[in-house]
Image 1 (cartoon, rainbow, N blue to C red):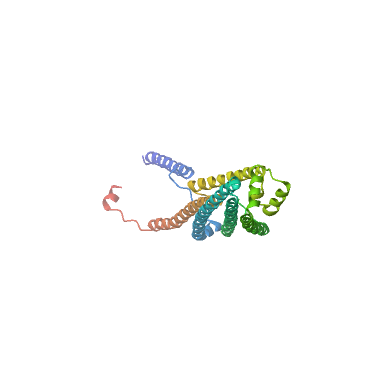
Image 2: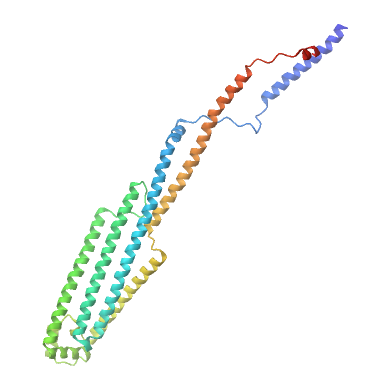
Length: 336
């Protein structure tokens, strides 16, 4: 009986042992479930340097972004001011053109009055020209400084700043224009005033000049006297010469009106400059870079935190495993 009873128990135990071994083997060979998180790789040296330096890089980027936006606002504000100045200068040029045309048209009737209109027209035209040139020079200089400041921030602009030699040549040419225009205007005004004195001192010669301007029927001797006394002014112009001068004046007036219209439209639309828009575009690029840097920093920071938490949880589990188990109660032992 003992042998008969022992054999099933041994077989059953053997089956249980084999089943236990198979179960353990299945558990060991089973792939990790989806809920289990794969172990994170240790942070590399470069990633740890990135974590350490990221706050400083982020601060530098934020400072550069603010500086670029401030530069763009300054360029736009300055351009708006220069556009207003240009509008005033072009408006003065329009007035000068109107007075010049009136001086030519009224020369036969007013005589000396046309000389005064011509002198005033040339003075206003010179003032408008000098203002326009100075405005262009100042705005160019201001934009050059803004480009240099952006370059110092490490920003590469598509709008290249002019070379030092080219800038110097530009300023020399513009200064030469101002000198020539001012000198020529002063000479013409002096000449008109001198001719006006001659016309008032010699009424007969002034009347001959009027006939020459209207009908052209004067003697050759009188014509030579008029040209000698009033040459280079409206009093010595023939009808055809005045018509040609009026046509040229109308063309110049049209260009000045177009410039006034352009300045007015630009001011109405906000007077933004290409350089300012490019500075804002560079600021947006830095903002995108800052966002990517922040996301990468937060991701690495989370990985570092998880790696620091894992050894702590493992040590707690080990400590719990070494604690002594409570003794079995007698009831349970007896029943077993």
